[in-house]
Image (spheres, rainbow, N blue to C red):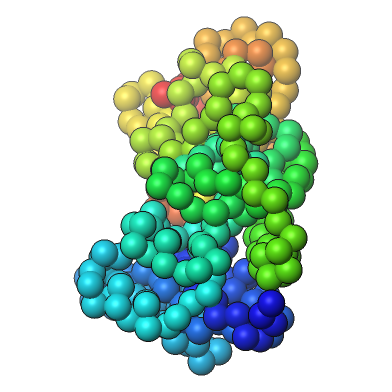
Length: 325
């Protein structure tokens, strides 16, 4: 049995979520021989500045070897990866890997996924769990196989989702737990103390919920298709990023685009049509919905900064009837 200092690990990841697990490995004395991350991303108005991923920034700061392939099947990259002689590969928030990559190390490749698989397979498991009003989620390590997010489960950790949580708070808790679970999984693989379970054995009663990638149109609020609780959960599930949004229209037809970051529920039977904005112009702004009013707490008008609704109302003066659509 190899010691953790001798086990050759290749780590793959890109966003901030993946930095915590890499940090735990490095600070825990594990032998990370290479880090694979996305190519630097053009940013700025003219796209003339390249920005390294959070994982690359951490890896460079700690003297780790970094590879940034454009294509994961590229022969040059595959040979370079093979030259690292990894015993084990770890994937956290990266890309779908071809078999030539995930099947390379003798101990396999495992992934850390931010849901309780088999539920919420896909690119945005945290957002969709909150959007769907789940009261529990978690984190899973599993071995990669051909179909995405379907491999045998190694370990899972459960956490509650509270009424006051949003996608951001759940993300941060799972990021911390994920770092711990990654090192525990490596230790258990080293000692042979794992009993991988096919996901088919864990399928819950009822349909599985997917977690597809979220686009701008996904984030648009449909005031007529959702009830009060669903609207509140929709906002929570997209806060703080990418944020739910809506168009607010006055009687003259002028339209304002608002992002909504925080809401509160007022269960009742509104007398106004769904989507009607009710406000005193100073302290509150709420929208009539199926089952009550959705109070807007933190919002952002296009071109302005995010602010509390009281601050928004101080700078937004209109006596006309407003409607969300």
